Amino acid sequence: MGSLFATGSPIVNDAIYVNVSKENLGGALIHTTHGDNLATNEKDYDPVDRCDDSLLAIIPKRRQRMYQVRDILTRVIDKGSFFEIGSRWGDGAICGLTRTNGYVVGILSFLVVL
Image (cartoon, rainbow, N blue to C red; front, top):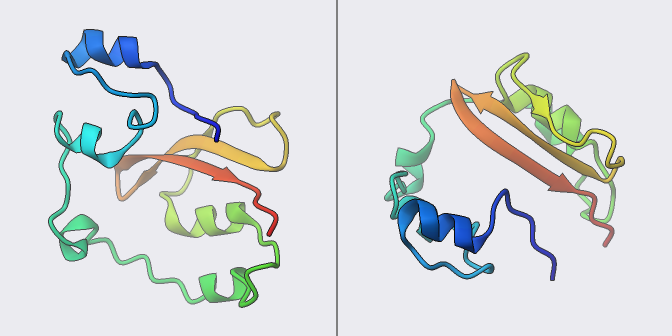
């Protein structure tokens, strides 16, 4: 199994004095116990209503069929806020930072062939 993160365990230890394994580095527990907030339930998480019926036409009913992740992003993120990282990595990966209702969000998507 591969790993992708911005820094390694030694840097996290130096910054917040917590020993964390490579496997747990990107998990919710490490992030929510050191400054970020974890919602107690789904209703507390995102009050923004981004209901868009066109999303139903983008995502195919058959899971084996491909779809364009960028078409979804343009409908759910704040307009003009997507900062793509590694756009030349290939068509199979989308990585970047954006805003949703003003909040900074990281986007990481890989093409998965079923």
